[in-house]
Image (cartoon, rainbow, N blue to C red):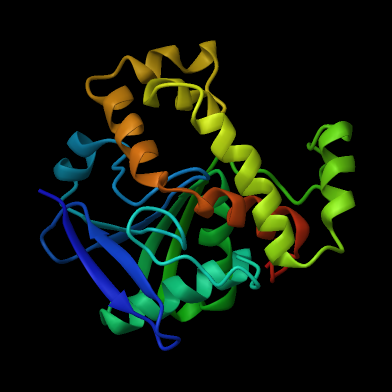
Length: 232
């Protein structure tokens, strides 16, 4: 049974910390969810239980049960890592292992770079490199992002949230799996017992507050620096 705690940061903002498993106390792993995503997702509960690790995850701002950031602030990779560091210190955890999927991989790397005292190993999966180092954003999308780069954050967030909310209203929860970039190559993984249901549950939690969290992630992660050098 998952446990959820609301941790109040020094700023007064609350973040949801989800304890997905309780291990034997020797090893804690922090999972950083994708965008869109939430902290209620255990990639493989059977393997987690077998290794007797304590698995925790934190909903980033605007996802799940975590308060959103003020609309006039960017949700950057660095700010997400700093939130996570504050949570780990509050819970008196560390050093921990950190795993990140997609956008969550950036947070995992940022935490390790900014707070190496809290992290002893990092694993990332399907995490895009900075576009300026390894171009991967399609030109038409990059053009649209560049047009927003000098706008104030509240304007960017409102634009993106409006577009995303319209997309969310057009299909059932299962249709949102495409937002994770799933393809025919993922069919075997999705066929694993409970995998698709766990992903749908994660996406339902991700959009509990509408598109607020995803809009903030997309804006901050693509329009602002990561806050560390990946070479670190």
